[in-house]
Image 1 (cartoon, rainbow, N blue to C red):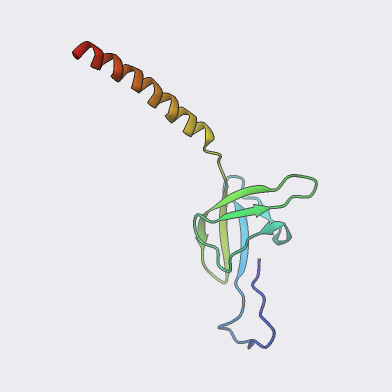
Image 2: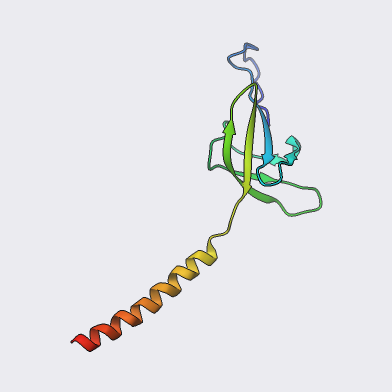
Length: 108
């Protein structure tokens, strides 16, 4: 992903775009720049990156680390769905409610 200069902007080193390399942290596979979709102007840790692979659904990754240099290397990890964690917490809270209610009935 490279930032493009707007018409009328100077071609100085200060306004030149940053060149990014997007790498899967788990497999060290590099994603083609044409596959990467990102709305922001600068990539930061925790941002969500959308990867479009031909003949497949888009895959979502989060930025794990950004390594500066002439070419900025962005290490990505697959975004996780937290639905199962939420359901587990609700189950634990529900079980705790019944245990607390039972103990309170014994006391009072």
